[in-house]
Structure formats: C-alpha cells, structure tokens
Length: 72
Image 1 (cartoon, rainbow, N blue to C red):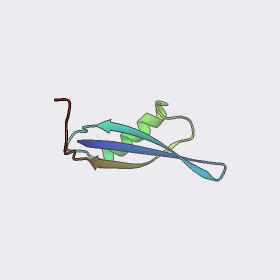
Image 2: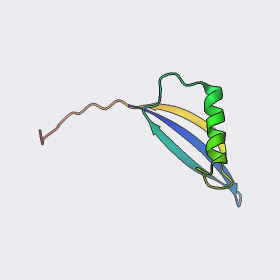
Image 3: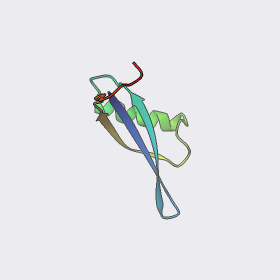
C-alpha cells in the first residue's frame, strides 16, 4: 500500500508543530511542481490551520504479510 503524506509545519513558542495529511493510494505519476502548488492551495483554502506552512511531501510504501489468520 502506498501513501502520500503532506507535512505542514508551524513554529510556536520555540517549538515546531507538525500537521500531516495522509492520502492513501496516490496516483502513480506525481508532478512535484503541481504538488507544491497544491499544498499552497490547501493552505489558502484553510484546509490546514492558520500559521502552518507547506514543508515536505513523502511517499511511503508498506508491504503486509499475514502470517496467521485464525478467523478465516
């Protein structure tokens, strides 16, 4: 399973707060410039709270292997 995670950060009272938006199963071809623009659009639409700035985007891929399934 793939997941796209968008990171937004905010410095508050000397500490950095992080907000993550997870998007399961993103499209295979991601245009980095479009993604950067989309993160700013999310900020402007107030999808993320005030003061958080776009910082980073990551693709994470997880493989799961079921070793035991006792209920099937």
